[in-house]
Length: 247
Image (cartoon, rainbow, N blue to C red):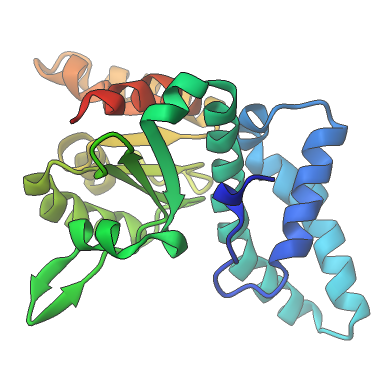
């Protein structure tokens, strides 16, 4: 594993164990990490969770405590799955890796943090999961926010999209949308009119969303432009290439 994905999980004491479980499953299944992140929900719930729960149960934790621990850890595991996929892209494409880097939020240096901060009496920083940095000019060109489901996080991400837009920093929301929340009207507005891009890692859910919005809003004059802001994870390579031309 590269240094890029060597970060501790938030609110989860089992980060190394879960990383090992995830990496071993992907490697023994002869999948790429790009393919694995598209199947994250199935992989996490059917293969990772049972082993995780078994270990915790044997240590004497109640089923309720085990379930809570899994909820705390799953979101961070999703971040890790996305990181491994992005790392795989950059490892395979050396010319791209020479131009941009993807840095986890826990590993941002002062120079990068200063670009993201709102300075008002004190510095206020977004909860960045990853920053995309142009290595040539040392500029943050986009930030990534990753969640398996939306909940209140989409509203927070929308706020930061408004704040970072004057700095020419894009905000990208990455989700599996496991609870099928993206198509709710308020969320649809945020996705299409506030955020720069939303990436749906589950390809089946991605096509469901696009098909539903085509049926409902396909006749709108600006629909073709708006729907371009919703991407499947397989499109992330094109997006990363786009960010090499921001400086």
